[in-house]
Amino acid sequence: MRRYTSLPIALFSLLLRSSTCVFASEQPQQPFEFGAMSASTYSLPPLPYGYDALEPHISAQIMELHHSKHHQTYITNLNAALKTQAEAVHTSDIATQVSVQQGIRFNAGGHINHSLFWQNLCPASSPDAKTSSAPKLFKQIKATWGDEETFRDAFKGALLGIQGSGWGWLVKVEIGKEQRLAIVTTKDQDPVVGKGEIPIFGVDMWEHAYYLQYLNGKAAYVENIWNVINWKTAEERYLGTRADAFKILKASI
Image (cartoon, rainbow, N blue to C red; front, side, top):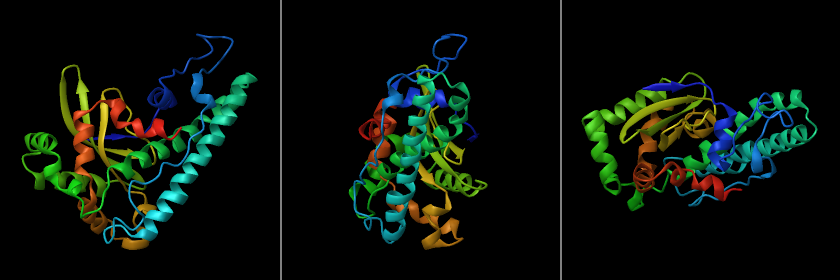
């Protein structure tokens, strides 16, 4: 199990628009190059279900606040930071370009993570919530961890081991023609966007994801969220490409 603690901003631009961060030593006339991304404005993607659809496992109150307030705030702040960055690039204000990087990284990560999160959840009554919807993924899970219970215990341990705020992810790691599954945790809003890494599904361990319903009972939240994991989406991400997993982000532009 690996833990991620930082995200270079060039990875975010690569993820969304395949643009590259170029520094002054390479292109003196434009210290930071973000290509067409600098003109992009992102919007809140709609949920594929109602706010009450995940009850009783996740309350409608939490879902509405989490989606319409928390996720929207990340998008609002991201758009503002990208606008500031674009203006700074235009005026060759390198100090401002540097100063906005942390805000872009944090808020872009929040948009990435939540966009993936909503899609990898579904109502417990849906056929997509059954593990039988992910036969090939579960074959690999069993090959990696032995059985479903051991896998869930390992994932639970990773989630409850997060100090402060963060995320837990099941990730497909592709190295050449080989691929493997890994459980990873990320700090704050750092997303899983490393080379060869495809997020299969994630669990938000920020307090705003569970506190209004579970209070300090994180373990109960982790136990109950298995009831609303969208295994059909997980299977599609496992079998698909990196671009397939992140297509929801392009739709939010």
